[in-house]
Length: 547
Image 1 (cartoon, rainbow, N blue to C red):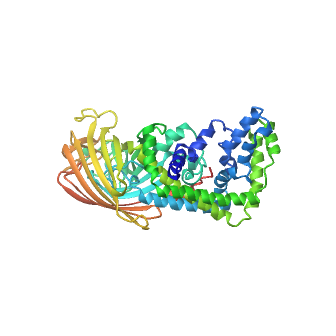
Image 2: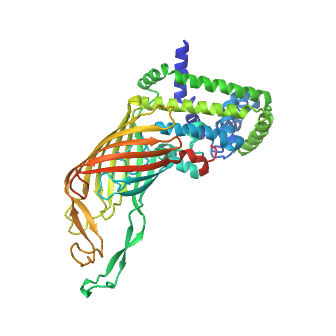
Image 3: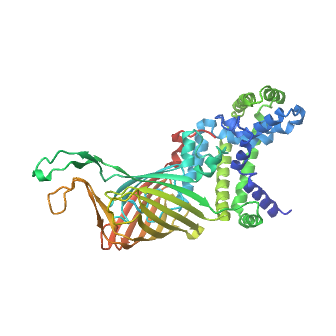
């Protein structure tokens, strides 16, 4: 077999799971219930090997037939080096070196992405985005936008977004960045198939007051005929404007089918960068193997076997191995080069994962996302907004995102309402292109977007109780609804420049034109400005433990 074919074969086996830490971890969870939730880094990293050994011992396999299993757990043996790196990554020097390296890479990768939606959606009163993106924040994001695109009422909106899986890992003390730089044990089917693909967001209108209706016995001044039974009073300086959920659906593919294998081979066959990353991982791991073989104490196979024999649940085996690992770590830490070598391996792993995921995305297809938003616009009926998001990346030539959706009025319509449940339907598209070189500390992203919305009826305005009727001093006692604006097509075009900082800060600056808005007739030219912060780079401050 030629060197090229051997490299392709190696890469393909990595893709199928032999080199994929997550797949390895998942395959072990079925027989490793006693260790896959253990908070000790050594037990988590070696869980699948410990589970295999305990299973063999429970089947009364003789100690002499388990030499291969012992070697995987013996730190003085080469087979244990890979899991040792994973275990020590979050334990050595208070996690800071490993996490610093990983988080620096996370920030760089986020600068290159054009698919993240961090701010408010197009229908919010204050937004800089005309099109919903296919992706969301990796951990937590906070965005403040000022302006408006489809609505007449401009404002300032703060949007808080999160990925359900990553916030779940943070709350349960499992490192939210584990997939990027260390092995990651799956927490189950629900996490993999639902939480990992689910993004959540909530938007708050900061410049608009919320109101509450309260009973009233009359006016402080004015004729008695103006007395009302209830009035609307300010209830707060800010109000919840919308909440949303986004579920990412990828094109289905099967890595066991010949069509996928052929495409994968085409992608990796000539990828020198991926081959270099794999070679670097191997070379740097060899340095750590040498340290372990020189300094790590040999595992007492008989004592480990007896621990597994004494307790079929695996608890005794875990406790013995954890004590052995701690004693061995104290000895190998005397080698001053070990921390730097561990960090180098982690950086190479992260590079490999990035390249692998990039090519896997290309082989598997483009992003396809379903989005739902519950909207509470100021003085207008609440709505349920449904959006389908399709994104296709041309790599160096940029990315295209397309939206199709519709909006329904919430709940039962008021008695006598002259409009149906349908609020509007819309189609929109956006082109994004990074303008800066990847090595630049500041990234500029150009966005060109167009939006079309059709309303079968004019917009509905809720006039609150206690509001004075226009041109009179007569308060409206129970509130009312009025048609405002016009039905038909709403067209919006936008150009935007987003400045992306290395620390996760994005500043969008946009200019837009529309033929009308939801409430007002006549064309409108407006400006949008915002700032968002992706808190993924601060994951260590949110209590993410080692996994």
